[in-house]
Image 1 (cartoon, rainbow, N blue to C red):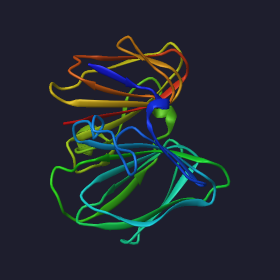
Image 2: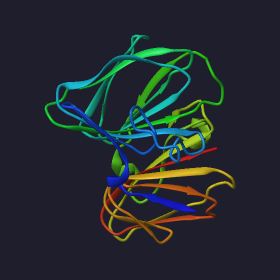
Image 3: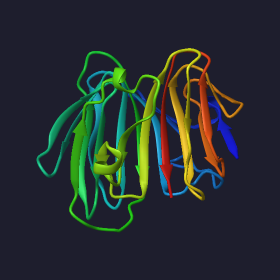
Image 4: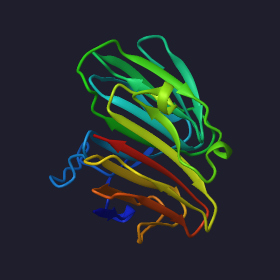
Length: 232
């Protein structure tokens, strides 16, 4: 099955500095039919105004992947970690037994991110944070693992969850394929461009919940960028 979820139908939260779209129930947006997808619990599409951001707040027992689409996000946390992650790059925070962090757009232009939350295999554990540069040219025309539970085997940053998060950039006319293991859940969202997934059209910033598909074939009708999560 492939359930395309148009951008205009996503949940929305908007204040002066933040315009957020929620692919799943989050905060004040609640849809009992969209509580998660497998181990995937949150997929937020956030636009953050310049010189603003999320003040310090706590997390626990969640793997939080931030994919920067435009601009940059600056992170600092209660472990003393600090970092600036720019467009095309990824950061991962394993909240573990508990961590406080803040994320700010310290740039002079709008920052756009996907923030993806995945339930960990086990609760607790030491919190951690990491980031990695992923030049977009390195994933042109193919899926590249951005985060996984086994970086030595699959690549990417470590997440303590049975999951892979992948990214790809495609030129108009290019196609890629992905063969998921049986019984797993996939969720796909585009940052730009119109694509086709097994015959279903997915527009820029739409989502698609996918399950029980032997092979995913993704074709770009326009230059496109996408992120695909595969979880238990």
